[in-house]
Each structure stands twice: as structure tokens, then as C-alpha cells.
Length: 588
Image (tube, rainbow, N blue to C red; front, side, top):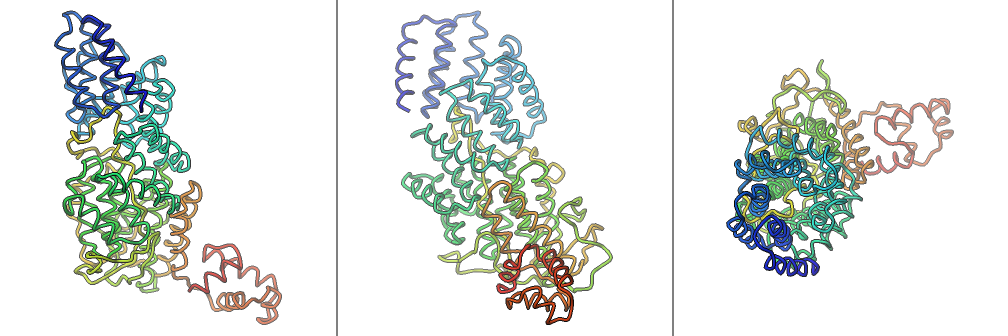
């Protein structure tokens, strides 16, 4: 970012040559922005504060613009209400839009659960959409605020417009925001390219490493393990907790759950990870929860997931709930999260949630009585079950390692591989979850207090406080639509598991999330299937290499009957070819 240093020098020279007034105030505001782009937040704030003192009386609009710039340098403290009021009074619509968007982002960064935040985002969006193309600062703050309340479609729209208008001054910030939003929407290939551009453009700014972190996560979802590892290795050459977070995610990808947890706990100052900046802590707590779940330490997995929920970050709220569903072995909660992700168009995360739901249902099917109840299990297309969120799978849940990542405990944490209940249910480990921890170009991460609020992630009906009483005892209950904690039967659960996993495979294929597609395929192999006697005979002969005509001759039936039987087998197993059937039954 050599051009920024040169621009900074030129602007400082211009400031010296101009007398106090609106013209110099405009140059100071631009210079302060450049200082922030260079990561010099204190210098930016000091420059603006001095200019505000020197500003002549009567320059109210210039004073408002400078105070907004000062707030940008210390956004973690929010935007003072008198500044927002002054922007409305004398600033004009572009300045009003910027003040409202900055105020909303500041509220979210501070964790303030204020109804006005969402009203201000809506008002700023209305102003921005009605104004001509000359107000990129409002677009920058607005797109980030929309992203933080989980409105990625709006964030993409405004970020793309901001990049067209703001040029180099917002390139790193807006491309970073755009890349995260693309990832949330399942546009994974585009997200990788956009985040790479953001990291390259950011140069030596700390934002570059954060953009690489998000890029690494998308590559993990895409199943690009080698590329993700290269990014992590490059990040390791730079000290800091952000680099450690990238390395931890890659360790989990490679099945080293113990190494992942060791690294996060070590650099995070303990299991609460309190040394991480608040906007990134929730993300890493979700990864820690997944690592603990892979090690069979469900109590610690639950605590980490609840810690992530307590952070209240809109983008991580759903992921934290999914981590909690895994820790509690709660099929209803996993299904609820999956359906919400799909409704929001979050395809990759929806695929991940379906894998977990399918795996939990499959585990239950292996341990339940085969006689079904009158109630039917929930299906991927139905309304989420009405059972309470503390429904948990059965205490007879069998231990079977499964999921996208295979845990290979090692190191100090690997010494204890089960929780106090003694059970080790299988689990569909998700890819390290993320898309948080970023901020507009004026955001000083080190100065940001915790983000503990929000409720705007689409899970408003179930707040973190609603989960406060949910406990895991090592038992798991299957919950039907009636809310009764009864067993729905092995065959019904197996069918439900297959439905979730087939949907996961479809969702993953639609967005290129190979990690989850492969996880769904592996989990499908383990779903118990009840074949009739005739179906078993036909399947065994297919595995033996017999043609349909040969099978018909051996079983004294017509070739058409064999074809019909195979069609039924394929439907039950979620496959479409003889080769897949052979591979599936060979694995079993």
C-alpha cells in the first residue's frame, strides 16, 4: 500500500498550506481516513480532534463530518447520539445516511441490543438507495452492519455499489465484506477470489490476515485442504492470535482435534478464549466446541457452544446453535438450525447442519426399537419439531466416528476421549465455522469491546437465555412432532436420516461445498437400511457381478421384476447405479 503512504504525505502537506475552514476540514477528513487505512487509528483520531478545535464558528456541517470521522477511528465506542442528531439537522442526506449506518455498526460492535439499531439500518438503506452515486462512506458502514445482522443479500448489493464508487479508499474493506457475504450465500468460488483480492490489496494491514482467515475457511468448505494448509502456513509466519486461529481450523480439518483445541486454548488464555477480540471470539469458540465434540468431551463442547451464543454475534448465532446441537446430541435443534439456514439461503451451512441431523438420526436408528410409534419423524421439508430444545438423543447412542472430519486425538487433550457420561456418540464434525471478526476499514479491533447482543440472525424465537437451562446428561431422546419424548422407531429414524443426508448432498453440490458432500456420502453408508428378503437376494447377486438376466434366472423371476426391485433398493439407499450399490454393500 505504498500509494497510501504517498497520499498521506501529500494530504499532510496540503493541510499545512490551508487555513482553518471547510476546505481544510474536508482534507483533514480524507487524511484521517488514509491514516486508518494504514492502521494508524490513534494518529487519525488525534488529527481530527485537533482540527475540530481549530474549526471556526458556523462550520456546523464540517464539524459533523469531522466528528463522524473521529467516531470511525474509535467505532468500538459507538457514535455519540449528539453527533447523530447533528447529522440529521445540518448534514444533508448523505451525511445522515453515514451517521445512521455508523451508529448501527457501532451498536453491533458494542453488543448493544437496541431496537433502534435495526431501524437505523433500514433508514440508512432507504437513504442510500435513493441517493445518487456520491456517498460511498455510507455504503461501507451500511454493508458491514447488514452483514452483522445476517442480511448477506443486502450486504452484497451495497458492497458491490460501494466498490464501484469508492475506489481504492474502500477497496480492501468493501471487498472483504463482499467476500464474507458471498461465502455466507454459498457462492464459494467467488468468495475465495474476492477475499484473495481483499488480502492482497490490504498489504501489511492486519485486515489482510483476517481476510486470509476467511479465505481459508471457504477453502476448507470446498474441500481444498492443500490450499487451506498453504494459507495457514503463510499465516504462521506472522505472529498473533488471528494466525493461530487459522492454524487451529486447519488442524481440525486434518482430524487433529486435540491439536486444534490445544492451540486455541493456549493462545486464547483458557477455555473461554477471552484473549481473542470479541468479534472473533465467538467464531473460535464454535471451532473449539467442534474439536471437543470430536474428542468425546461433550460437557466442554457444550460450554464452548454456549460461550459462542453468549457473544451474540449475528453471523455466528446459527453456527453456535448447531455446535450446541452436536454437543447435546439434539436432533430437533439440528433440524431447526438446518431449516433456518436454508430459509436464509445459507447453502453451505445448511448442508453442514443436514449432515449433523442425518448423523444423529442414523445413530438413533441403530439403537432404537424397530417397532414404530404412531407419530412420524420430522422430515427435511416439514415444519421443525415442536419439542423443547433440550430434547437429546438416547443414552444408548453408539460410538461411531463419523462426519466430515475424523478426530484423531493426540497431545494432552487427547488423553481423555470421553465425557463423564462415558458415552461417545458419533458426530458429523463441521468445517471450522466463521465469517466473523472483520470490520470496516476504520475499525480498530483492539479497541472494540465485546459484541454480546443481537438477536438478528433469524433465530429470534430462541434466544441464548432460552437455552440457559438446557443440560446434557449423556442421554439422548428422540422427539416427535407431538413433543413427546418417545422413540419413533428405527425404520422411521433411518428414513429421516437418509432424507437429511440426501438433502445435504444436494445442497453441498449446489454451492461447491465438497467437504459436506463427501461427509454426507460417508454418513449415508452408515445409515441402517431394512431390505426385504428378495431385495437382499438381488443386492447380493449384484455385488457378485450378476447381470439382471442372470439374477432373474437364478431367482426364477422376470428381468422386469429384477429391474423394479433394484429401483426400490436404489431409492432406499439413496444411490442410482449398480456400481454405487456394490461399493455401498462392500463398505458395509
